[in-house]
Length: 368
Image (cartoon, rainbow, N blue to C red; front, side):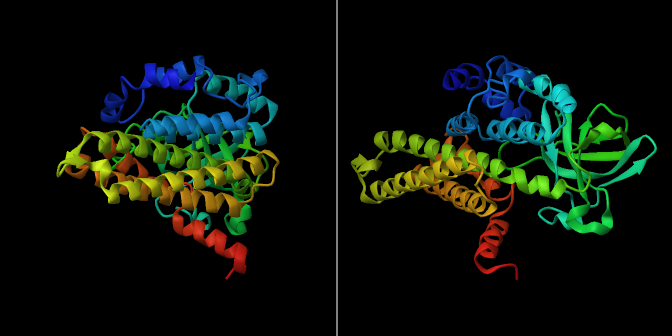
């Protein structure tokens, strides 16, 4: 069903959406009608009540078909924001947001990164201060996926600037509130169909029920939900690797040089064999991590290893496969070029490769 939906509803229009810089709201609603949003949410909240692995499968399939921007947008909405609400929100908050998100009537985003604070959460400047009526939110965020179209944003803000990581709280921001604004769409080198925005909060008044979870527990919630986020990024990477290989196999079987198929040269054959071996190894580790996640014992180290290896593998594979296309690989006419451009950000968002190495190293050596 996922494949049929992508073939009918996405493939004919995706190039147009890449040019426009975002997917239309109508697509979100069609995904909702098809049951693709909230796949593993309870049916009482508009979901399908299926296993979380089906959501990962959807991400992988979207990515495998070369729809990298849509895969990122979908990952944020259905695999990150909705689980945050399911695991942390009050019943009233869940009732307000999750059924509408499952229908595609509300699009979600999460806002952590700031112009001066990417992976360094301690440098966060966005503030939420107590008021008589709730909270006042001030500050700004950057590089927010779905930011241009989001109806609800999970915002990370400092509620106690003197408490370090323990001073971070999460808020559910209705983007219709006065004081909220968006900058111009950020122009990126890849994943063009995934809109990316800078968000501004100017004295936004939030009610008490906008607080997600407990005050000061925001950093702990982020750490709790990171494994799921990185599972999605890993599934996206593996799907893209499979898609890159499929395109390349078709090309080298048809393209000829020096009197034989490109695929008959030993260099080509050995290169493709290595890609296939990487896919098998990557899938084995992804499946191991999903099994651990299901049983509640997938930790930050496993998530970091998964994210590090699969995203770096994705970039290397896209580069390797594009090379086999020769000059044609450098043209937009051949989809391998989009796989190449869409891959690059995967080693940056959801924690850079360098941060992933730090996480793994700390598990081995302790904090320096």
